[in-house]
Image (cartoon, rainbow, N blue to C red; front, side, top):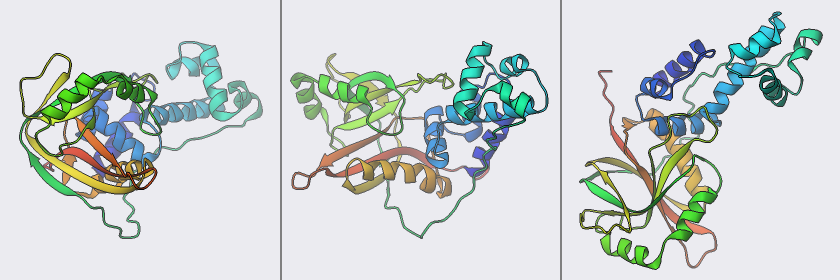
Length: 291
């Protein structure tokens, strides 16, 4: 995984002045676009969009320092207007592009390089589960892509579930984990726009095929799942588990993620405030060592 991630960084570097395709970028990593963005975010601490923007503005700063015209640099790095470039550059650096030329000041953001750092020898608890084909049945909505904090559109989706829908979901759930889950899939390819969206579904896993039109249905093929249980303050423990799954476990494991919905569920503790048991389910397959 680290080799592929560094190949992605090299690819981005070679195409900073061109339109970057997420499809091509995720092919280098060998995982779906959505999973790649999660891996990148949890390893680097920033979104792929932010990284590319930072690198482009850093290279623009160097070009200005070397005497290139502001207008030429703006269009070189994909900005449609001089005003748009000036605003973005000032927000990023704290000074105007013209200051680089007049005063010789600049700011840089170096190219990333991924390495594994082993910290503290703490084991991550996980189990591998083989699952038959099933349907995700529930309510779904296109929501803004967001890896941290509370996604208000998902909160609204949860609040929109009717009693009738809730009763049908509970009647349908018939395979592990027998819980109401949150699943994410179908992320936008146009990741360079800040308004990237994905489909979020709140529902259940079922092998039933007779499902009313009150619920959305997503078929999932039989595959292997890596399951990460966690317990503690909510939502911080769940978010920390997700971060470690993508930044520590996945790059060093014998598994790689595949293009299928990932999901999680949470059971709040009735005795302790803001305390919960959660599980994160990631679709995986054994790595092909012949790659």
